[in-house]
Image (cartoon, rainbow, N blue to C red):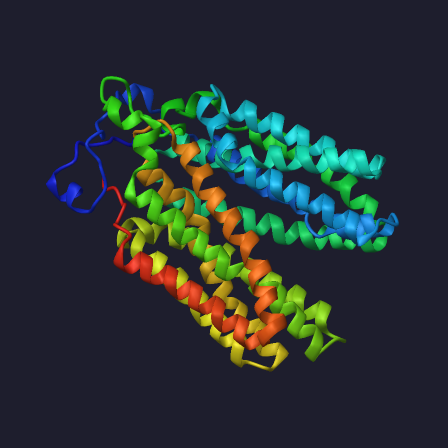
Amino acid sequence: MLLLRKPNHADRDRGVEQDHVAAPPAASLPAPSRQSLRGLDWFIFFLADVQTGFGPFIAVYLTTQKWTQIEIGLVLSIGGIVALIGQMPGGAIIDAAKSERLVAALAIMTIGACALAYAAMPIFPVVVAAATLHAAASCVLGPAIAAISLGLVGPFAIGERLGRNARFASLGSGIAAAVMGTVGYLLSSRAVFLVTFLLVIPTLIALSRIRENEVDIRRCHGEMPPEAADRADTNIWHLIRQRPLIVFAVSVMLLQLANAAMMPLMASALTARSSQWATVLVAACIIVPQAIVALLSPTVGRQAQVWGRRPLLLIGFGALVIRGLLFATVRDPYLLVLVQVFDGLTAAVFAVMIPLIVADVAFGSGHFNLAQGIVGTATGIGASLSTVLGGYVSDKFGNATAFIGLSGVAATGLLLILLVMPETRRTA
């Protein structure tokens, strides 16, 4: 059973407002059962399977349907824009929801319908509508997973839980990519979307295994009980003005600005140096980080409570800086695959740290999921700008210069964490 305590002066010295933390009634905080925790594990695993079906397979499938690259690019851009715009509304929807499980189930069924639409009618209006609905549904699923996790285990055990979430998501993505690639090769690219539709069934079954009465609705939203809450801290503007949230959102934007362009640029470099093995090498470069994330994420979650958040954030940014510099200097295509270990380290850190730090900062406000949307928007902006800027610098000055520049952006994020970001860890 998890109990929250009143803060002392040492808490305030760490730079986080914690005066709203108090002990809620024990009866309202049932310990999560093994069934619910396992249900969450497999829900995340199968959801990652479902989402993998909408990755690069869309471009492959539409190409086989005689779509032009302009049409494919337009559909992908529409989905990306909707995903960016929908981050904060998606978080607000989860904050307003009375049942995160119900919202998640509706979103999953919507995604299943989108997969079926892709397979059944690959014509422009249907595909655009499916891409839009898929992006919108995805905007609520990320916050829903974090909210259900927080509602189950509470703020002091959420670090390890988020690490476990990242492990199952990574395993699901890796296995699904292999299975769907095989299905596409042996059957057809259309079959990938039929498999995606069928995977909705075990995803919903796993979700149903999470017991509703064990998901504390107040904790899902980052609220405290009415008798313990400071009403000033529940104001949205009070949340948005929190320095840790602003600094962290800017840091995540810099992370994505540095990171998103690295893999595409490296894939182009691999193709130029070893065109015969480029596909295999790129696949290996994707698998290696997924394996590292699956291996390290639970450890990251545990150590976040022991070391605090800032040391791990510095490790994640430091790994990204090193990765960019190695990409700029290493020429052997096979050694570049090993460099991707640093990508896995960065991914393992931030897969856990993003929702964890948001939970730290927003706890007590009742707007945990809206805060996730704010950081998600920063993530989308950084990723969108990264590919454009990285490609431009690469075309004008070469890949080495582009990688060094991206490392410089990552170093800026590292300095921001080191010099400005306060520690946000809460102690039981």
